[in-house]
Length: 355
Ligand code: MRU
Image (cartoon, rainbow, N blue to C red; front, side):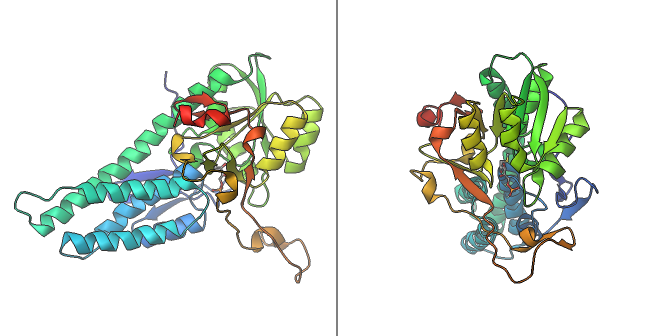
């Protein structure tokens, strides 16, 4: 039975998009209305919406919002304007390939709309706009189904012993990071629904604290037992025998299985290996970028220093020092036990089997 889906971070409502503002959770549950594509650009940059699949969906709706604003009167100028809108959305965040994938899907949709019989340009543009809305809506609906399938596939490959697992995750790869349900947290939800979850350990995930703020919030909503730890406690928990498996999401997976995910994922994979604990990556196939042969080619986003030098309004270090703030790292394929997708779970070197 499909479990109830309550958390929908990107939602089409009448004639605009509603986003759950993820910068204010868990202290405030705020909904932001997005009516113009430039507002969507800003929302993705500011991480009001974040998480690889969710920013892809947001960008898809952003393309439609932008298409509504174009004033061109012939379809070629219209498509050219759409390319500019796509460029602005592409420039928001570099690492999660789902963003680029979704934008490309939208552009392909627009280009494939046939001319009306009378070749009236205004009718043609209206047909493209309609097709773009339908494509964005479908992308959102499909992602939800994909996440449910990832949850089931993950459940099938989790360790058989013990019956009730202690899982550990990093960042937020949950409903908030997707259309709903989540990827890594989708596997956790499916394990919980099947009676196979004892507890989830959630890394806080410095610097933006997606684990502490978002993952624990999601679990709390549904009564999933969750224990928050700081990132530097994970090795200790593994050494103490508290963790049976690690499940994380992904922002981009290269053809050889190397996986970019939130900064700190790589060190988690290393310590999992050191303790012989299985390490799973859960992601939709749209996160696989077969154009990149290995992870060294994945662009890594660097974000502003303020994420490091202050927590809330409190400055935590001297002013005039240097900062380095990569938002993602790459986990080599040989540290990954299996990549769980909607089409099945495979060892990283068998990605081609499910792509
Ligand atoms: O910077 P963020 O919060 O967008 O990073 C999110 C992650 O790294 C997630 O783990 C990843 O996108 C998978 S989301 C299903």
